[in-house]
Image (cartoon, rainbow, N blue to C red; front, top):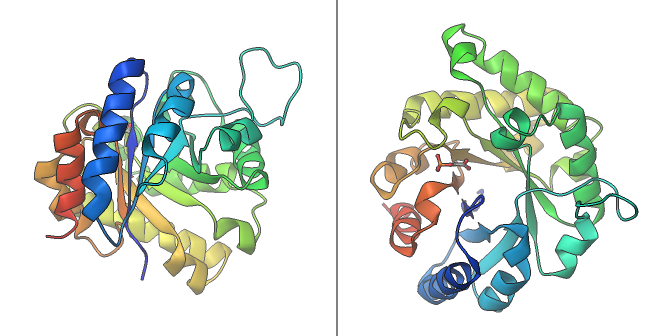
Length: 252
Ligand code: PGA
């Protein structure tokens, strides 16, 4: 059985005080939550403070990005070991905003994935199609190509350590959520890709989150799909009520 995993992607939101307050409240409210992995991914300048705020709780911390080199003359960048050093367990890689606004390629993402694994961070690797690609019937081709590119060269041992997030770009921050059926189809497709490239055991073990306008109101239907193992939540993770509401939907 795959253990569900709900992560909040705070993106470039909140200030230090609000981030710490939200983290403290989630840590407290998650005390009674069982059978699910939880994480929050604050802006990197608040990682240290948020990691302290959730220390010893059920809530882990993830970063939203990193650089693939371990250290050196890379002004403005942050390495995987630094993230681990301030208490990160996860790192989101290849988010559509980084692919489409910051111009990251599958090759860039692949280097980061390998570096994250090297530092014992769990990468949450995002894939997802644009609306034009969905309309053109190219969804699974796009996902297969992003999967092949972003996860190139991962051994069976390494793939076992990653989390995949399927995030249709047209559903991110738009309020237009994929239907449970649409999402389930892609998740199943991703398992087929993993089965062909690795084996059935890998395909069944890897957790695949859905992301894109997940709210407490639509979470139960999405999370109830057999191949959806959790959610990567943007907007609704910025408030304790809605993030906890999504976690509560797992029990439905
Ligand atoms: P959203 O963002 O929940 O605000 O749509 C999801 C994400 O980008 O991870």
